[in-house]
Image 1 (cartoon, rainbow, N blue to C red):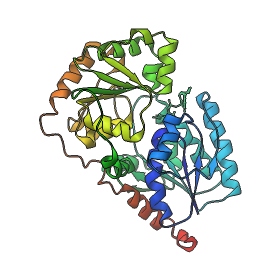
Image 2: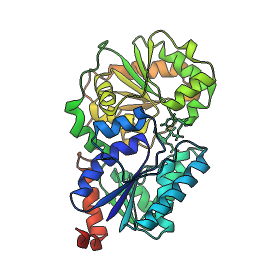
Image 3: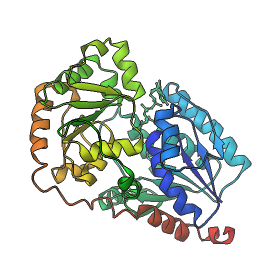
Length: 358
Ligand code: UD1
């Protein structure tokens, strides 16, 4: 038996395809930490992506980062102790990923890290320490790209490294046909922001939103709860430009439809950067660096430091928007849409004792 852990919006998306593939071979129990609990962030995705209700729901919810991680660790450890798996699978780099990975390590269960080997140099990025710690303690590391695998090798992590591709592409390939056309204007930008670098900096948030009003096209701005709270706290809701429409967080199908149909994407989300790349829509990323370097190297993505967004954001969006008429880029940097099968194969070869549980 395997245990698959998730808890935030992007993890529910990736778990949907992993769970189907893993369950075709072995029994799998699931743990949802409950880090995300809003219907739009979590429940809607369960429905759209047909994720069965989790076997264990930890109801961790929001807290300061240390408390949130500690609660995930404590509650996940209890579940693993009561139902010992042959291996624990974690995804990505959130506080849920770290908490569940530590629970596996403390209980002596082999650990599989899906989305291993991503790196940034921002020392204060919460996800950075999470992913580095998980990569060091993982038994099997599934890297989305060859560069991610090379990075892990250069760091001499003790686990086995396999390049599998990105499971997020599998989900996109399977669901794109179900994504209905976005209603409204033909030329528009779709925007999302959720990272602390912008949401905890009122000046950066204000300048990004003001720049969104100067793009010469309407902006659909899907608000993450953290960003809505920040806009309220800094009293910025009243200053939203008329061309910027505020929306609740989008469901998965609505999000990929908006990215596909948009002229340009403006985001600080790793997920949207790749979806824009796969769908041939140019992207402007509001960060000084990205873990998804391949998207920048081919011109699909361009970085703008949110601390001095303003005119630079307007210029970057205008230049990126022109790319839509030209041919986009090749889209094979993160595999071919069969990453979940490769993760499953890597687990089968890495843990031969699993065969007996079938
Ligand atoms: C988390 C991940 C991030 C991932 C993102 C996707 C960490 C450190 N960060 O950030 O890597 O890209 O999820 O969305 O784990 N909130 C709600 N409803 C919810 C969940 C959160 O209102 O369902 C609010 C809470 O008030 C909380 C804030 O949003 O203070 C932020 O939640 P948090 O758990 O810190 O994660 P994200 O910012 O979503």
